[in-house]
Each structure stands twice: as structure tokens, then as C-alpha cells.
Image (cartoon, rainbow, N blue to C red; front, top):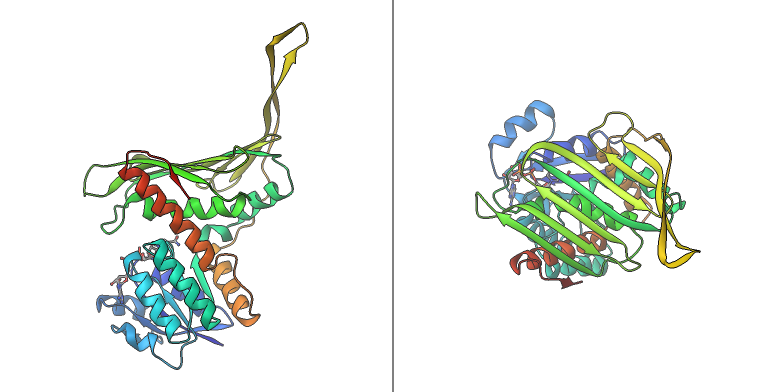
Amino acid sequence: MIRIGVIGYGYWGPNIVRNFHTHECSDVVLVCDKSPKAEERLKKAHPAIPFTTDAGEILKSPNIDVVAVVTPVWTHHELAKAALENGKHVFVEKPFTGSTAQAEELVELADRKNLKIMVDHTFLFTGAVKKIRQLINEGALGELYYYDSLRVNLGLFQHDVNVIWDLAPHDLSIMNHVIKHEPEAVVATGEKHLNGVEDVAFITVYFPNRVIAHINVNWLSPVKVRTTLIGGEKKMLVWNDLEADEKIRVYDKGVSMSANPSNLHQLLVSYRSGDMWAPQVEQVEALRAETAYFMKCIQNNETPMNDGVAGLQVVRILEAAEKSVRNRGEAVRL
Ligand SMILES: NC(=O)c1ccc[n+]([C@@H]2O[C@H](COP(=O)([O-])OP(=O)(O)OC[C@H]3O[C@@H](n4cnc5c(N)ncnc54)[C@H](O)[C@@H]3O)[C@@H](O)[C@H]2O)c1
């Protein structure tokens, strides 16, 4: 049994507790939240799990192997660092840390201590993202042209981070997972309308081989949209995460151009419009698959795909995007 201590029992913490607690290889032995009100909620859901308001009890306990950090981002570095220093593996919420320097420090510390870090990039464990990665890896889309994601809703407003740090980690982790190239530069724009942090932002990421990604995150949208378009030379797909069935639709559509033999200065454009198909997408609770995978990585001493380095790569783009927003869309090299 791998013994887990969870710090943070707010909105997301209960999902982490439930998944670690119900897995056959792990057991949540202590939950901490600095707010005593969280205890009532924990007692209702899991009466047998002890509660504390002092994170030190988890961080220093000799009876805990893994610390899950499910608190706001500005606390991640301090709590994860203390857990690693006390010889514990860590499961940290996205975004991994509030800065690249903090992420680098944690990666180095875990390496030195031979401990695992897993960053909760939940979407990588959804059936949809697994299928998209499979299609891209098999070459079904051909050479990639673009990745374009729309993640908008009315709220939920956060008070400690802007919309980029709140929502873009999902898209950036997915993008890094499915696009094989390393991102080269970021251009981002955004605006603050209500509470002093950006609530609307547009992020463009440049990759080698003319692959381009665009992410639109917005807390001021009248409707909820979770749609990603991925275009390739051979096929194009639309992933609508709000669809119950047919989340992914693959279109045999494309454009080709050739020189007009009778006038070499003229291009002949031909549009291909073939079939659409909706591949089967595995129905799993992503967090369940992710927590089970972490247990397996610890037991087999394997590095998780969503390790500290993957978390660091996302934080590096977030930081670059924020810098670009401050300079009104100036390109920031990665
Ligand atoms: N993976 C996902 O899909 C997903 C979804 C939602 C939130 N998150 C992430 O989870 C983290 C928490 O988000 P949330 O929405 O649950 O926030 P929240 O504010 O609802 O909950 C955070 C909890 O942490 C507690 N806390 C803060 N500092 C503490 C400390 N030092 N010791 C003990 N308790 C402390 C607070 O009292 C609060 O109850 C964030 O990093 C967020 O980005 C991830």
C-alpha cells in the first residue's frame, strides 16, 4: 500500500482524495486543509480519513510516502519542496509552479533525491487525448499544420491567477503531448476587465516545420466552448469535449496546389472533401487512470510522462505568454 497525504481540500482536492483512496494500491492516510470547514466535507465523504489544519503533519510524517499538493499555485513550490526534502514523492496540481525557476529547482531536487514528481495534467489521460495522440503518431493526419483550441466560459473567475495560468495549462500540456516538435516562441495578447488580472487571452505558439498553435482562453464568454481543431496535410479533426458521443470527428478534407501547366504563374487550387468519421473514444475517468499510473510509476521506478520536466515545459510557456501580454504581443523566444 502506498500511503498518501493530501494537502488542499477545496474544489479539486475531493477528486484527488477519492481517486487515491479507492485505488487498490494506495490509501489516503491524512488530509490537510488550513480551513477547518473542509473537515466537515471530508467527514461526510470519508469518515475514516483523519484531518489536520497543519500541513507540517503531512510533510513530516514518517507514515506517508506521497504528498498530493492540491492548493493554489502560489503555494505549490513551497509545499512540494518541503515534501521532497522529507523524502516523499509528490503529485502536484497544474500549473506545476508559479515560475520556471521554481519548477527547475523542484526537478533538480527530485532528481537528486531519486523521487518522483507527477504534475496533474489530467487531460492527457482522457480517451479523447489518447485517441488524438494515436491518430497523429500513426500519421493519419499527415504532416501537422496547426493546433487551435477554444476554452471559454463565463468564469470561473480566480482571484490569485489570470485566465492564462488558470486555463491554458490544459491546452499547453495537451499540445506538448501531441506535437512532437519543441516550441520555439510565444506571442500573446490579453486584457484585464474586472478584477485586475487578464480575463481574456489569445496565445500563439510557434514550432519548427511551420506548425503553429493557438489557444483562446476567456472567462467572459456567454457560452461554454471546449473545442480544438487540429489540421494536417492529410486529414483534419475537430475535438468537441462537450459532446457526449462523437467527441472527435476526423475529416478527410484538405487543399492541394499545383502550377497550371498552361500558365506557370497561375496556381491550381483543388479542395478535397471526403468522408467524416468519428473514432471510438475510450470512456474513462481521467483522474482515475492518472492516479493509477502514478502508483505504477512508483512501484516500477518509472518516470511518468507528466513528470516535473513536463510541468516545467508548461510553466515556461505560461511565463513567456505572460511576458508577451505585458509587452502587448511582443514575441518571446523559448
Ligand atoms: N486538474 C484539473 O483539472 C484541475 C481542476 C481544478 C483545479 N485544479 C488545480 O488544483 C489546485 C487547487 O484548485 P482549487 O480549485 O481546488 O482551489 P480551492 O481554492 O477551491 O482549494 C484550495 C484549498 O487549499 C487550501 N489551502 C491553501 N493553502 C494551504 C496550505 N498552505 N495548507 C493547507 N491548505 C491550504 C485552501 O484552504 C483551499 O481549501 C490549483 O492548482 C488548480 O489549478 C486542477
